[in-house]
Image (cartoon, rainbow, N blue to C red):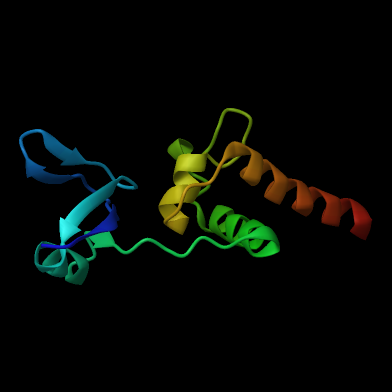
Length: 114
């Protein structure tokens, strides 16, 4: 049977067996018949298409804006969004360099507007 990759949407872990525990943001390979009810209940989601270039930066900035500012688990000690939190919002991997470049564009725009 064919399997596809899905992302655990959370907010709780998914237990598929004693040693198969997946946390929100983790990926899991499932056959479509097993995935269907989990998709319907929003326990898992299909991975998003990863944009490139300016679209990637825009997606990162939009995801950062959606993060709960009161949830300390979303933020680094320096106040940047954690890549894991961004990945949970976006459904694809984000590197620290990509995050930093997207945030730098915000800072540059602020400086230009002064």
